[in-house]
Figure 1: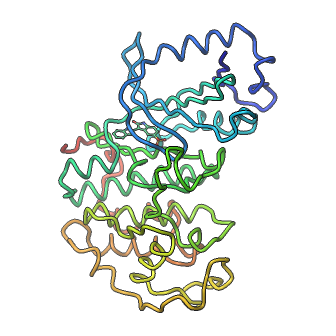
Figure 2 (figure 1 turned 30 degrees about the vertical axis):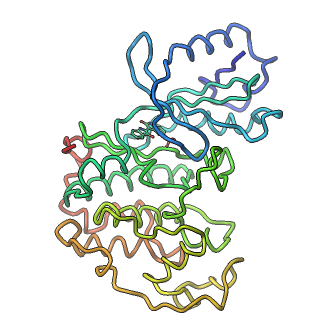
Figure 3 (figure 1 turned 45 degrees about the vertical axis):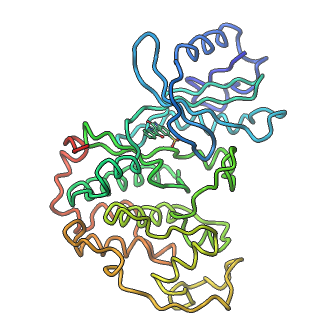
Length: 338
Ligand code: INR
């Protein structure tokens, strides 16, 4: 039996119990789900595996995400289904569209059906031999911030932005953020359910230091680490543990103290005994001025501020001088090389 959450917009509608659901609606949802023919695995997300799927009637492609639920015996709480269902209402050219939600209460499986893109940013960078042009980097950065700005204005934050959930359609030169809003519906585990380690490379220092009330600035931090990776082809802070991740950040930005970051001493995992590194010049690490000019470097510096409230917000970042010569009317509509 299956419960489709399609079309649920208000909390008044019963969406979680099979009993409340008309038998006809279940049959429809089940039939609709079965029309998606699952193909190869695209990746391993934080909450489950993603497969490419093709609609047997229309030939349309989609990304089908199988959410593995933690407490299988308990089923999905109504709040979670509502939370996920609300994501369907989010429509923005730079946010991957959630088309449908299929819930099978019996085997405790939740499938999310998303818009499909041929590349994620990791795969796209590789296909370009890690040599993205200055214009491509600028366009991607602008589109990331545009998607982010829109989500943040709807009080949704990502929490786990990384090149694997930034999708690219080179045919149109469009970038779309994926995996958005799920952190609010589910808790982010330390490992994926196949025990793959969740990457720490894009994680903001306030999370690494055990902060609990982090918010939208964590996404700006992630963008601030993704841009240098587009420029150099190398992750900026490839830590292999939380402490290694923190120390990689400290080596570039200096070990935080109350001058660099007011309130850092109050964070649960801050230690006065941390080794003391001095801040370095970003340009030593992010070379290739032909791919990212000094204005771009200034934007990164504003995204990688230690104090979360001092980090530039997405809306303001869109107005940064780095984007002054970008044609905002055609961004995301110009084909890119593959
Ligand atoms: C590709 C992925 C293409 N498309 C990996 C990928 C490699 C090449 O994960 C993906 C997705 C897509 C994807 O086309 N639509 C979505 C991923 C995700 C949501 S999620 C939607 O949430 O990040 O797993």
